[in-house]
Length: 328
Image (cartoon, rainbow, N blue to C red):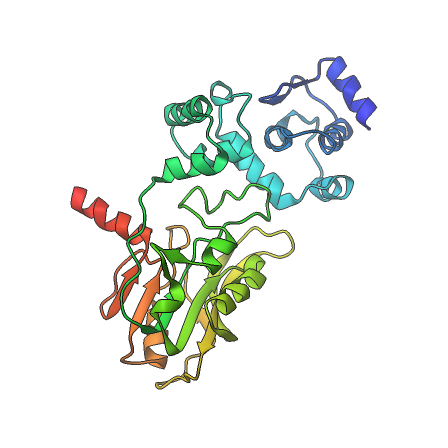
């Protein structure tokens, strides 16, 4: 298949450069498949080319069959979810904003920006020789979160900014806010103060985690000094793409430190409400469920975005929200 694909390139039907892939004239579905198979054996520009290729289905004579991408997954190691991400990102990066030293991770951080802003950030990244991690931090700002609150709390509610690596892009969250590696979350420490220092001897933890990171979520529960007990399932309404099944719910893990059974009314384990338009924002009914189970306690929310009456709130996103309000 590689030899056949090289013949297509030699005949001028396919143009591949370090920054883009273009189909120059109509090809058959089988020839289109040959390009996919060829890309399955290429180097670090793979996902840029995959995105471009997926955006040129219209160059296939008579279109592609409904099972085409099932064949692609069988013939290559590519997953459909990865193809969709690459397709979305590269559709929004025009040729003038593509550079030899940039890869899909760079483009994933800027593809929602205006074209002139994309170019500005990418050129600066190249000039300063930033790593992808530094590039991400520069885009989202370098504001440090405030110190952890003083005192002890027995109700801990947390929505960590998980870093994803299952797609090969780790971009869906990164394009919205700064993320943290699993070990950083497990060993959460701000200005020398560890998370364990603000937790009472008897306490409960409510920890948000998505299904692909369930194992890591339980590791965080244990690292913070809790024993995993059960969970809530938030059924969001609608679904997101997935590698095996559609994503229709998110988990809120419950862990216990010491002995701390609910002192109020028990709640059902399924929470049903539509998701917010803002990325990763959780429903308000969770606060109500927690307060019903554990009334009149010392509540704290970690990685908070908004303040809630009766709660202490901590997180750099909260700090940014307040700073932006003051500017207005």
